[in-house]
Length: 118
Picture 1 (cartoon, rainbow, N blue to C red):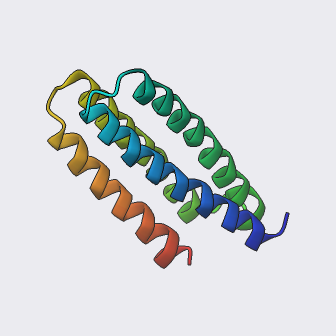
Picture 2 (picture 1 turned 180 degrees about the horizontal axis):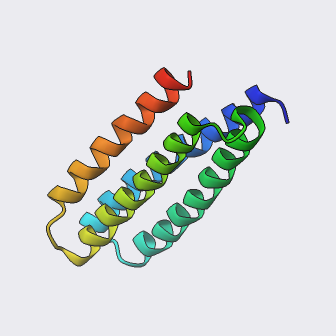
């Protein structure tokens, strides 16, 4: 797979992940129950797909360079933030701190991906 195809796959996957995450969040807030639980599992599947496509890019394009590894680590922190938001929303506990963490690491991963690795 060439670089452009791999990059487009990765971008498409994380775009879908963000959309699925937001839909799941609003379903959990609305107490959608079983539907939200199923969608949450699909979000977790997309974590894996985004991670695998990102690992492929790091290995094939950047040769495990330090900046790419840093972006990958921050990308994993985005998954952690998303999961914290969804679980805390489901449990009806304080979610503000999780949202702040998620927004910070999401901004950082976009910066690293588009400005640093460009």
